[in-house]
Image (cartoon, rainbow, N blue to C red; front, side):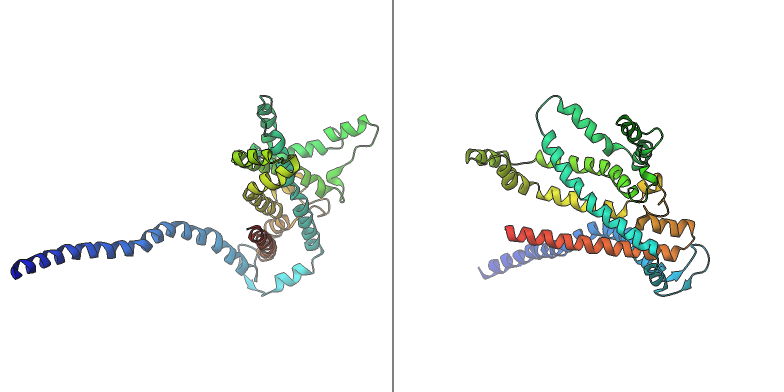
Length: 314
């Protein structure tokens, strides 16, 4: 009996050892598999995002033409930048871009609510609103340059029809920035419209029906039922709109090249002009660093406010 018991225990140990080995191997694989899956995207992120940021900050500490030897100047580029009147013009224009561009999510939501109807005619109307989304910003810039032309543009024809002189918007230092923003908003509103239409298609129909049975009217239904469900979409639309407003370059390059007299320049275009045309890569990198800091601070404040508001509602 004792011999049989010992044999059973020996067999059990032999079976248990491979099982324990497999358990240890599985436990080790709990971190190994995610680490291997994250290695490539994390490496690409460090190489393509973090690396250029660090390199740009480092270049901003040198006086460098982009090809020859670099001379260490420390914070000299930043000191010169803060004494440059053009920098404050560009910064002011960036603020104007940011404030007016935040109209895009609002207008996009309003249009999405209007277009979210089960009517046959809406398909054609939607395609018209989607058109700016598939056009390159360069094409939009060229089209709006023709539109604003004081000789043969549509705007000039409309003004002459009512007996008023045609305005030269892109040649006016006061209105040129607003004219470019109007062109850029045409495309950004279409982008926000698509996001909100996708969000409206995912609304909880049962919750809306229950609210209507409880007597919720249009405004109260939108404010308390629809809008909270669209908050994630609104968050994404706002963040992307902020980023686009601060990094907008192509519209300005196509429509005015920063003119007249630098009045429509933003930080992104000033960085390009200093680096490419003035051969001052260090100075351009300093502008890029300031733009990155402004963008990071604004997005961080917006995220903090949004998270606090979401925490209060919970």
